[in-house]
Image (cartoon, rainbow, N blue to C red; front, side):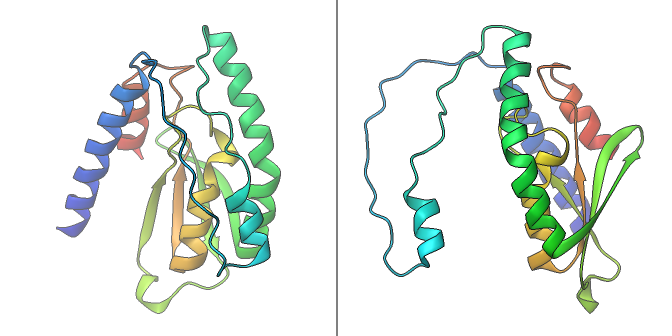
Length: 172
């Protein structure tokens, strides 16, 4: 029963996200806010938290521009994601129902999770994290949750408009 509830919530979230991915961006003036970096965290984390945010207000005008943006973002994430994952889990790329997935298996699985598999659907507005770059959160889920994770590499809206994302996720 719990799995059905989780599946229903996941499908609903994906449906809403898919709709938002297809919505035109609306320009708004956004106020600049400053939040100080916490002093009670490690120097390494302070550097990450205090770094300037990545550009977020980008509006590609064509599929070609989307693909260029996706390739650029994914390339930057691939190496760091791979390094983090190699230290914490094993990865197997395969497909389920014709959909590309990454099975992330931690170094040790908790006894209570031996018969469980967690599904991971990367975020980032359905576009900039295809393939290996989309497994970052799934890697953390596997390592800290000590459970096997299936990270779904769904088709992105630059290649396949909504409801392709939803179809892939429901298939897996």
